Structures are given as structure tokens and as C-alpha cells.
Length: 632
Image (cartoon, rainbow, N blue to C red):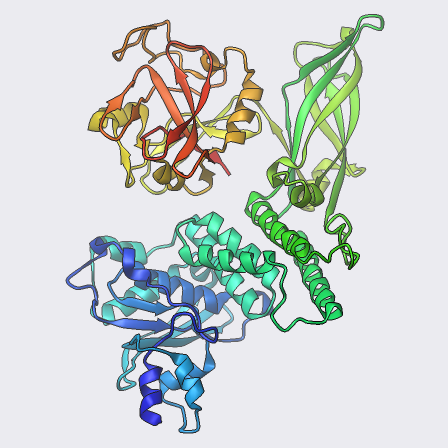
């Protein structure tokens, strides 16, 4: 029996509920990060470190350490990382040798079928007055001898930006004999990018929440992690599994009593509302009310010589929270409906009416606007009642970032008071000074100037890009030029990349935007058109130079095809790539949307020299088109 358990202790099982799933993380590891074999032939089970002195709010830190080390071992070596979420106490005892012959054969069989692990990693993290002490040991499974160890103090900042964990991974890999390249050493010796930090932190918070039995919170964190870093497959897999579980409506095979079933669902809905209430308490997630400073003319009353003046507004929660929360609430709502018992249980109007007194679904604001003319005279006042209705989001499927869009109409403004320069300002929020509301983290006010220009630098390669705000969306004002797999310079010539940016197939385009930016959806382009006005839209978005003359099939600088570039969008004709050839640079610009048209196709938007209007069409995903990213 003891020999059998020892053998089982060196293995992990795929698909055993008592244990975590096995993920072969090193399958896509880039070989350029090491020389030699990179530790090939070794395998390791990485356990979360034990914790001492951590506050409840820091309970996710062990999972953060575990997840980042797993990612580093997977990406910077050929060592096979067998398991990242292994916390099963029995397996830990078996691997350490501290088991007894009384361990049942059934328990041993649960450990599984001979997927050998040559090493396992354990450690602890202890809170100190200035930071943390991190200690990690890598032990050989065969003889229980320490193969590598790491023990150092880590500051709060070094943990927050993952530097301390990355340095631990660097030292451990080298002690295990992995010959890292200079590039790999430099990367592991520094901080991770913001997207990676956000994703790993959210993933760790999700793992911790799931271990604590709060599945709604866990799902929201997994969605947040996947949004921050779409390449983080652990977050994608966990969110998919948990989403399917919640959306099914089931609460376990043992639920036979409907009274108990209803109680369990009440518990899930209560957990959801409590989670949102806790999020709303944090200062990191205020709401932002954005309004356009440009005004539109409404109805004219010729008898009274007055006119209605209209501005557009949108209320948004932090997208890093709002979008994951939208998906989480949708899963809970769909699960409740899947029971087919919601009406019978008196829960069919959730979330419009909550099951607690927390009132988390009614974030309503009363905002007083004033319109001031060039003589500093207030010529119009109007109150906006706004809020994000989560009932609309989950029941009517209104996207979270569009749920708070409203207009403000200043009624019957005296036409004689209107001057060329009108100013729109916010006088108060919920009866209090707007600045005070912003300071308290209740509501931030952001005035949006149409055509406002800016710039940012892509941290991945140091390239700088111009930006322009059109309506409520901040667009790149030039095509993306980040080199990735399945991207090309037109005619494989670098000078075209410098002029037009790169061409991407759809899958590559979906991953190409830098952190904090994303591929625009169909709705983003529609918003652009509504702001820019549908009439002769193409000419308003085209750059003033660079477009070929009408009918000229070669590159050129003719005037006929150029635009007026009213908003600073500066669209250039970067051409396209088919499977075998390139075409139409100088005559056509075509940009991917994130919205799919079919399994093999996605929507695109195009501008051409010969036509003044924009054209939408579906294109095969394998083709190469330009990319314009929008800010999250």
C-alpha cells in the first residue's frame, strides 16, 4: 500500500474533482528566453505559499505569488508546469512524505494516473512592518532534498507590481540550471506591465474568492482578469467553467427540496448584492459623467424667438469593473431564469428589486447644468436625472457602457442671448457642489471637447501614437504599427509600415492593441459616424493628403480622393492583403471591427478615393486589414 501511495504521490490526475485541472503551460513558451534545454525533462507542481500576518484584504496574495511564479516558469523555461491550482491537503502530505499507511486506497486512487512530477514548490509569505518576507523552496519529489531556495524581503511596491515575485522566479530558475538569455533576465528583473499586474491580481482575487465559496465574486474577478490580459488562459478557463455553472441554474445534484433550492438562490443573489455594495465603497470605482461641450440646435419657436439647445451626456462606471460586472450579473440572471422557478419564488423582478436593503442597483444622480454665453450670462438651466440601470443591462441586454447615455435639453433659450461662444458647466450634483462630489469619489465630471487631440506611447515597443476624441470615444489618430504574428507591412516593405501601419488578420488584430486600448466594435464605429454626421462621412474622416486621384489605380497624392479631416481622425489608405497578394494602398483604407459576422468573417469599415462615404462589409478573417484602437 505504501509503495502505491508513493507512486501516486508523484502524479496528478486530469479531471478528478478533488484535485485541480492540469494545464500544460509551457506548450507555447518562447524558446528565445533560454539557451540549452531550458530544463526540459523536469516537471514541477507549484503550490501557493502559506501566509502569516495578512489582513483579510490581503488574503489573495498567496494566490498572486503562485500564479505569477507559474506564469514565469511556463514562459521562461521548458520545465513542465503540471498544476497551478493544487491545494489539496492530501496531495501535499503525500508529496512531502508525511503520510501514513492508513491512507485509504480510494484516496490514493484519486491522486491519479502517473503524470510524474519531479519537483514541487512550497513556501510562505509573512507580513512585516515594511512589507513581506517571501521564502520559497523547490524540493525533489524523489528524495525530498531541496533543489533551489529563495528567501528575501519584499516591499509593498515590489509585490504590487510583481517585481519581487519575478525576481524570485529568476533566481529559482537559475538555481535549477535554466540558462536564461540576457533579455529574459532583464524582463524577470523588472516590473510587469500594467495589464499583466491587473490581470494577475484579479485572477488571484478570483481564486481566493472561489476557495472561500463566494462564486459570484470569483466570476467577476475572472472576467476582469481575462479583460485585462486576454492571453491569460487560466482566467479564461476559470471564467468559462464558473459562468456555465452559474448560468445553468443548478445548485448541486443534491438539491431535491424546492424550499432549500430557493434558499440557496436567495443566498446567491444576496452574495451578488453584497459584492457590489463592497465595490461601491471603494474610492477606486467612482462614476464618471461625461458631456460634450459642443451643442446641437433643437426646435425653434419663431413666435417667442427661442430655441432648444441640446447636449449629449453619458454616465459610466469604471470599465475595468463595469464590463466584468455586466457579464457576472448576466450569468446570475440567466441562472435564475434557467430554474424556471423565479416567478414562483417571488424573484422574477430581480435585479430591478433586490433581495437586500443595500440598494446597489439604483446609482442615481441629479446633475444641474448651466449654459453660459460669451458675456458670462447664464441663459439656460436644466437638471439631468441619470443613472446606470442594471435591470436594463441584464434584462434588456443594454451594454453597460451605453446604459447611461442621455441628452440634456435647454428649453426655450432666448435667441438674442446666444453668442458664438457658449459654455456648458455643471453647477451641482445631488444638490451639492460638483467639486465636492468628485472629491468624495461619488461622481467625476468630465467635459469632452470634440476633436481633442493627444498622444500616448506603446510600452511594448516604444512607438508613439496620436489620438483624437470624437464624441465620447478616444481613437488612435493613426493606424497601429505593432509587429506581431500574422501582421505584415504592405508588399512586405518597411516604408509602408512607417506610412500606413501594419495589416493584421482578424485574430491577430484582436490581440494587437496595447494595454488600456481595444479593437473597436461595430457600435464604436456607429458612434463615430453619428458624431461626424453621416453625410459625406468619408471625406470628414480622410486625411487631407495621401489619397490617390479618382480612377488612378497607383499610389498618388491627388486632390480628388483626399478628405477634409474635420476631426483629426486622419484616415490613410493602407490597402489590404489577401491570401496571395496586396492591393489598393493609396486608394483604400479598411479597418477591422471586433464584431464577428460569421465563424470565418468579421465586419470591417472602409474608405475609398472614389467615394465620399464610408462603407461597412464583412471580410474573411484571414485577410490583412488596418487597425485603429479605441481607449478602454
